[in-house]
Image 1 (tube, one colour):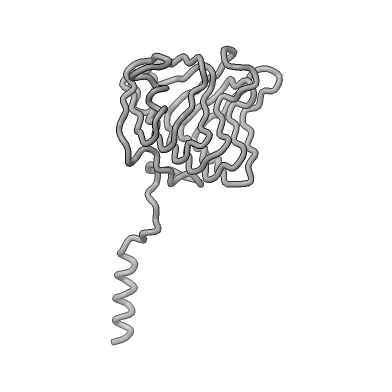
Image 2 (spheres, rainbow, N blue to C red):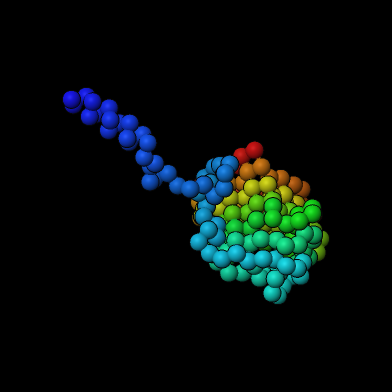
Length: 198
């Protein structure tokens, strides 16, 4: 009787999901940032134009926390000033029609943008960006995942991760050439967790 009760308990325990199993950022998410939440508990923001700023712009979309960013337009967004991304934002580049979205100009910062999910985006800094700036910078923060992202033409590093950065994944992405004399593809300077997966 004791053995039967033990077997029944073991079978039931195997069938009950473990509450410690966290939900993945998206199916196929890997690495240390795989459990980033993004804007899962927030609102949906539709990018309706390719303007640098203002209502319906990409900059406006990422300026507030707890958002899922959907693109109703495709094309190139030319930015003059650096875009600072807020916490708990999911940028769904795969929602853009046509050839998708390219953000071109003065770079982006995900510093302290905890729980970021970024998918299917192209970022190009180019000569119009400030000298000595990175294409993408993460100086602090945790729980971020970049998937199917391409970044190039930074004027310092193209993708720079430094400081107290925890649980970041860059997967299925391209970090390409930088510009000018101090041009590195990626520079990762942290004692904490960063995953690079292909």
